[in-house]
Image (cartoon, rainbow over all chains, first blue to last red):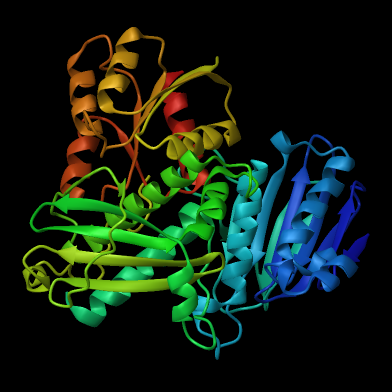
Length: 175
Length: 175
Length: 126
């Protein structure tokens, strides 16, 4: 069953029939996490880097912010049986979609830095990333396989996890 | 490489280093400009390294002492108050060392070999001298960092050491 | 098989960062020794039981380049896989070190890059 994850929302599922999808990832980050051993996965769509700019909003909905949304997202996965050692985490988005904004101060870049800091703190590696650029992305996660695909317009690519190889994983074209 | 170009190179190198090493991202300067009076009341931490190669000089990194706890915590993946004063000093020293190591090839090109001294905390502020030094401040989410790059014999010594276009060895990870 | 690792860097914070990265990698970590300069690092290598050495270059007392040169001259330590993690930006020096059979990762590093190189070296050591 297809579940659409809205902006500042997340979904976690252990139903192998489920497909999680989130649209319009501009400067926002889409984070897909999957544990093949526990058969659980989740998709998170966060908007802003730090909750300190609006703690009330973070209290109301922690998934607006990277620093409050990602820990809760990981907690939900761990509560559902996921283990850190077998968790595959992929990230996409963080684009500079507002051309009037200089790259140096872009929200997308800040989102990604805060996300990397949280993973470092939690001892989790990024398995694959497709971050930056100027285009909005759609991200999908298949719960059965853990397969993550991205689309920008009609073009669909697969994010493939790579560990133990010389290159960090990235987007590749899907035939 | 002179004046404005060197200033920009220092800014970019410092921002990139702070982002990758310490998960701190660049911010716009405060709206009302630097509050000089407030800055004078900040306790400033200073670290210096000396380098010697085709040219000699020093790099001094200054930052408010209030930035040391988050700097060390970010680097170590710990909470802000969980680090010791020794770790905080060491983190500042390592940041200075890495900024210098990345700046030298950006200034002098990829071929020259430099010897860089172990970083040391210092009390004396660098003496501004526009003939022999360039200083640049970057604003970060946790504060600011200022780099003073001084060349023995004056900045004119750098003439002839400018890296060729795209010669940014040392700035990208090599695996 | 667990991997016994030696981390050589004059910064204790950097040694902790490297150790944290190793703990994130998909490998069975054995004993981890630390040294603050090349001389201490060389002594640790000569004591034996090191499967992988991770070495900085610019250090007091003895730098990493000299440590590696001496390690490669000693039949007991010549074959130990070595990864350099350093701010070194001189291609002249990096090439010289790579010719000694070491892998190089630039500071500041991402844990993903270090883990990938460690996995390669662990595979070679196995």
